[in-house]
Length: 254
Image (cartoon, rainbow, N blue to C red; front, side, top):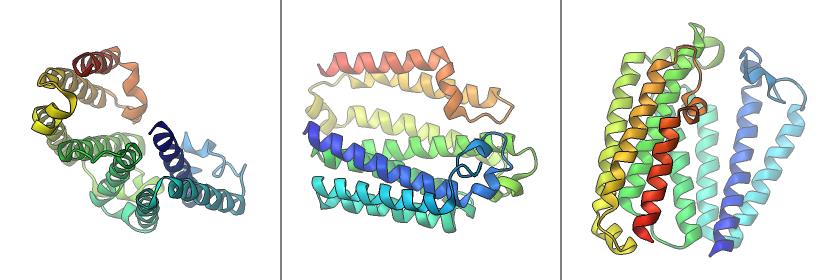
C-alpha cells in the first residue's frame, strides 16, 4: 500500500507541476508587471517558452505513466485534473466565482487520487469538508489579491474587477461555517466511528474551529495584499491548533 500511495503522490505532483508550468507560460506577460511573480523563470526570460512547453509535456507524460502503474482510475483523475486546468487557463479564470470552484476541484481530485492510492473508499462527509476548505481558501486568496491589485486588477488578474470585499467576506463566512459543520458531521458519522473505533473524534472540533477563526483574523488584519496561505504559518496560534488537532486525533485512533 505504501508503494501505491507513494507512486500516486509522485504522479500527481509531476502532473500538477506541469500545470504550474502551463500557468506560468500563459501568464508570463502579466507576471512581469507583478512585484513578486516577475522573478519567475519564464517571466524573467530565464526559460524560453519552447523549453517550458517541452518541460510541461514531459512532466505530464511521466505523471500519467506513473498513474497507469497504480491503475486506470488514477490516470482518469489525472486526466480530469489536466482538462480542468486547461479550461481554467483558457476561459474559466475570467469567470467570477466559477474560477474559485475550478481551483477547488483540483484539491478534490487530489483527495480522490489519495483514496484510490490507499485503496479505500472516500468518506462523503470528508469529501464535502474538503470541498468547503478548498472554497474557503480560494475565496480568502481572492480577497488578499484585491489588496495586492491596488486598483489595477486589469493589469494582472482581470477577474478581480468582478469581486468585491463585501461579497468575498460573505462567501468566506459561508464556507468557513460549512467547514465546521461538515467536519463535525464527519466525526459523528457512524462509518467514521466504526472505521477508527472511537466516538470521541468530535473533541478535535475545537482545534479546527480555533484554527479557522485565527486564519480569518489573519486575513482581515493584513492590509498589504500578502497571500494568507503564505502568512498563516507565522501565527503560533494556528500552528498550535494544528499540532493539537494532530496529537489528539492520533491519541484517539491509536
